[in-house]
Image (cartoon, rainbow, N blue to C red; front, side, top):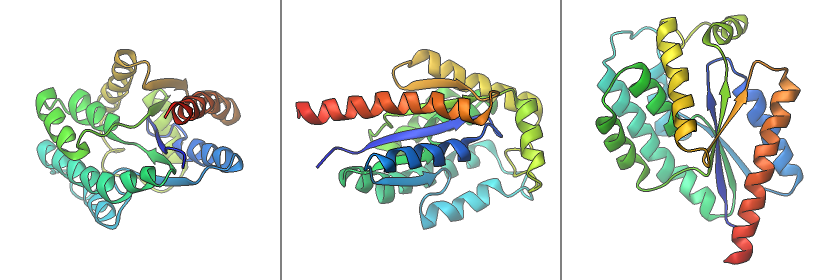
Length: 217
């Protein structure tokens, strides 16, 4: 059985993650991979309930530490219940956001100290790390325009001040610069097909590395 691997699609709000994720899934399934799509917060029944609480726009009073711990709780359940079993079965997991988002939004944007976030995240992950993070990078003003065009209203995170969203964007770029082997930044201001094609090149490299690892094991 081939070893499974996990790819995360993350980045700015309105950057087109949903379109890219579906395009990657279709591409991998055409190659015979069994793909599991998931998201954070969420991915499990418990995680989806936590997601509702976190993103509810009627609770702007939620404290930063409360928010962090809810993300951590959802992630712990996500890893244990869904991600690890899928990988053990040789499947490819594609997640809409994962732990890089916590560092971007809760550390760089919210300002919670890095030690606290690292402690919560390591507890949730239990030593696990995704194989690759694709960061769809987009100016927050353009991203918010795209989100508003959906006509679905803004969730609690999307409704933050623009400076908050700028800090979160910078957080992704800092992480990508620090770990270039695990992060790939894609300019999401380009047209959809160009963005997807750039992402598929990253996927091809990931597939090749996974197959090489299988051959060596």
